[in-house]
Length: 250
Image (cartoon, rainbow, N blue to C red; front, side):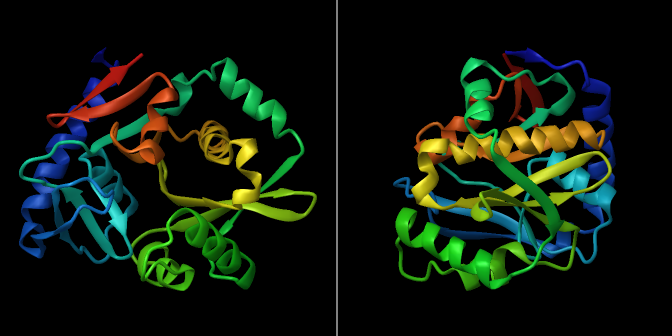
């Protein structure tokens, strides 16, 4: 693991964020709950709301390890756990490996459409099916995910729909600005699991980033202990936020 070549960019972001955050820090506080990733730990969210941050401010939050949940911005400040590590891709540097090329080939019949985020009936149905199959917990409902998690009034959000023969296979929820994209969530039809839709989604988001000259794709948290969150590090080289500095893993 060694430093990536864009250190000046990261240093600028750190200094700019420090100055900006000093003026809004009073809006943030800590909330402790059971770990949402089902690790046997108490999770502490350091969260708050800034209304409305501009695209540059969102970029600074992301570069400092924050994520978005609805209109809230948060980072993990857990007392006895450091499992959640922010991960991002420098899109121009990414080269797919053999397995990822196979996923692209296997899904050559998939069509993709980028559109503004809406909670239409087709997506609500698919999200409900995904949650019911993969995360069947009390309170997990598609309408709640859209209302409280995806939809927001603080940044520009989009959905990337993937279809096979016209049938909706999966949808990626993303936020995006001039130089950044944040992968907020991805849900898919479990009947298409053999197509590796999660891998396909990241590969296609990276394609969009390159086409739009977006340098950084933020993928959320890399959590080695959680299988559903650990596959992101296979997109190499990737960058991990270690002690407030982005380090590259080849």
